Length: 307
Image (cartoon, rainbow, N blue to C red):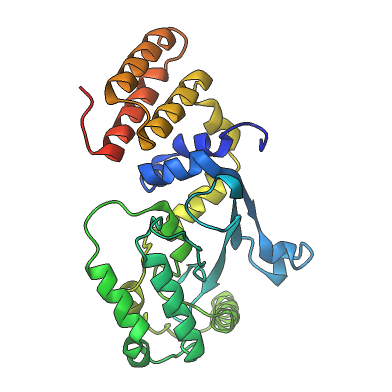
C-alpha cells in the first residue's frame, strides 16, 4: 500500500463522517503532499508478549509517517499517538493520552498554537506533580500554562478544528493515571465478586473535577475520532480507497495542489472538473459525488465560489 501514490490521503478523503468532518482542506493538502503511512498497534498487549492480563486490548497507538523531503509543514517524519484505556476510581472508563508535540515550521502550524500550548501545560503539570491521583485542581488552575491555554481556547474563532489537534488530546473527562486505573480495576473486580456472592456493594464516589479537565481539552472529540481510525479506517483502508475512481482522485488532487500554489486560474480548474465529470459519469456512480466534494473543498480553501 505504501507504494500506491497518495493511498492514505485518498483513504482519509473517503473516510466516514466521524473522521471526514475533522479533516479540513489544509489538512487534506498536507496529507496529499506527504502522508506515506498509517498503522495501528495494540501496544499494551504486544509489550506484554501477547498477554491480555498485562494490558488492555482497548489501548492502542496510531502511527502516521510523512515524507520529510515533501513536508513543508513540520519537521517530524513520524507522529505516534498512544491511547490508554483506563478506569477512574469513580467507575468512569475511557481513553486517555499524553499530548504529542509537533515541530511545526514557522507560520505553518495548522493548530494555531493550541497543540504547543497543550504540550507546555502537560510539561508544567508533570513538573509540579499534578498528573497523579488526587492532584489539586486549585494548583492546576494556578499554573501560568493553564491560564494561557484557557485564554487561547476562549479567543479561538468559530470553525472546524484541524485534524492535527488529535495529537493534543488528553481525555474526554479527566486524566487518569496508570496507578489510579490499576487500583480502580482491582476495586471493580472486588465489587463484581461481591455481586456474584450476593453481598452488599457500596456506591462509588461521584465524578471529581470534571469541569477543570474538560475546560482545557483542545480535542473533545478525540476519543471517538481515534476509535474510528483504529477500528474502522485502518482495517478498512482498502475498502475506502476502492471507493475513489482512480482517474478522478488524481484529477482532484492535482486541482487542489495547483490551486494552492496559484498556478492555475479558477476558470481552468472549473473546465477540468466539467470535462472529467462528463468523461467519468458513465463509468462510476461515485464520480459526481466525489467531484462535488472536490468543488466544496476548493471553495473552502480559497474562500470563493465556483460559478
